[in-house]
Picture: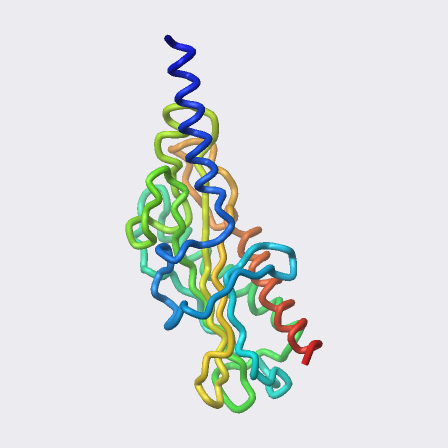
Length: 224
């Protein structure tokens, strides 16, 4: 009887984890940060990661002589908790800003604001649930998301951290959106439910996103 129960538990766990492993952000998990999601298509980032992306086929990337990185934000705005304090949330957005600036500075000079010939990068961090219930972005605190009923009931895995980003790329001259991207990534696992998440648990994901965004621009510039 116990073996049957264990088998059932493992099957449920397997299904739950396979659902979490979906490569793309599902449409019902879009945050609403972007103005239009209808043109997004499945694509592959320069590093080989799956993304949902749209690039205006008529965009003239050669016109951009500098890039302005708007301050990243959480969308929807989360409430800090004991597990995810304000210091962690602030640290994550600060690090994302710096990483984007570091990578795009390799392609274009950084601008201090919008202006002629400026490409605006408008990034946000949104939530993707790693729980068995598939919560919508506005129902969970972004970043540290518990695999409900898996870590506590089976002990098979630690708590997951999961992030998603949505970013718009805007022609400062016209105000027109010329590209959009939506993607997810896994941060460092937390050892247990008592561990407080810190910004460093998300650094690898944020760096990967920033590198891919800048390289995507480089590739587009080369093709044009």
